[in-house]
Length: 190
Image 1 (spheres, helix red, strand yellow):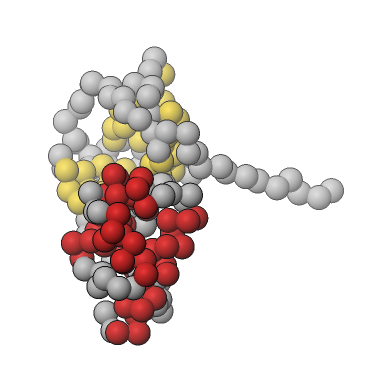
Image 2 (tube, rainbow, N blue to C red):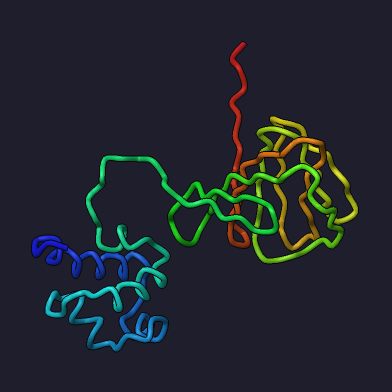
């Protein structure tokens, strides 16, 4: 960070804390950073280091770039590395920690059939791009075709499987409990 950019970090940290209506004492408890260090960071008398900024970014649920109000790079592309787990590929489409998270998911054809539905906190919305997706949701067994979408509370037992003979591709959006995606459509004027 250049010296000019360092000068703006303190006010940015104070602004984020005040927007969230947090005290320095509460923030110290959450981050493990002393009240005096937090105060000196906000006033600009303490140099921000990665060791101090990482817990603050986590506490505020923002990226490091957002935390220090880094200038835009001008390149809007998301360059996330695909994650492969159990033969499935997850491509992150969002970078902001906390809140809603978006992924493109590819489920290979011929994946071993799983049958155990899972539950966890949160909310999920998925949209099928190609192939067929089989969704076991509680007692329901649904087959979703390209262009179909579902949303559900992930506290319901659920399992997402490939429902066809070719790889299935979908967009998933996951959110914390209570945070939902809202799909709105306007009616056509007569």
